[in-house]
Length: 88
Length: 366
Image (tube, helix red, strand yellow):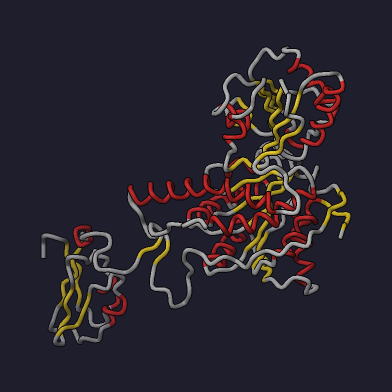
């Protein structure tokens, strides 16, 4: 019986499967902590799963955040601003 | 049981025995009567399959792709422009290492417009990683379709069964409906289910892509042994990847594939009656290419083609990777059907060493 190797077709979820994708970022999401109500909509929408809530505060893993800006777009409190890299 | 069947209906009868879970197809001449027949069988509850009507060939094969990823047995059929329209998905099916069977009623490709038979469509699958067979008769269309499911599922590669448009698809012959039990569909190397926690075909860079194509090529190579074994185990053996006709003592060897081989064999008989030692190696498979069988040939070789790439016939190109110093005739395009007398002329010119050029585009037909 033929052994068929398909390992190269299958990928399992893991942190940073595509490398340090934070290096791709042009704009960085900056959280205004006074405005943030911690509603977690951004956590739900983040396609990279890099936003977490720790001790009622948002933390963003900038090592992998690509800077897509979706969090800023969905934020109902206008608490996330996209700032050009290097100008933050 | 024997039935009078067209090539297309012979394929439908074989598919019925194979009991696919899903059939999705879009009509195109000269393939249409295959899936029309299957639709009828599903309607009459003779065949318990999901028949999905779609708006294009691209979607036809995409529907099958999704279903076979989840473990279904799938079938579709197409021709010519339809095959070109679904071409991208052909690569996704093969690259994902998924088994399925597709019948290709071979037909000319436009432009200029033509709906008649030649081999110009099926040859585009050569690089995609499909197993590609070409049959000579409605009986062989029936037999190869049954074997195709078995072979395809064993090596996890898709299988295209080619039959000449009109010459085979729309002419009837007596076909033996075999009592043949197909094994249950072999589990895939992977199956996507609602609970699956992996991604299929994510982005690859460099080495993994090379590895993917290499594994596919290796397994296509290994499918040769499976094809030979399944052919031997079948109620009738055609000879594996190739069929030899009066080849034993042949000094002159004709290499061809498809429906017109029957007429060419009659021409070989005519020349044999005149004492000329001529025979045929009929290629039953274009992929995997039967290199060993061609390598073994000992004699002067003439390849007759119904498709071209560059200035040569496609089989001419393929054979010339194994044998040098061959003659190549390119003819029979767009429904130009050569008969025995035409082949007698071609073969006589070849045997008399009157073919001065390596490649000859042959216009002379009765």
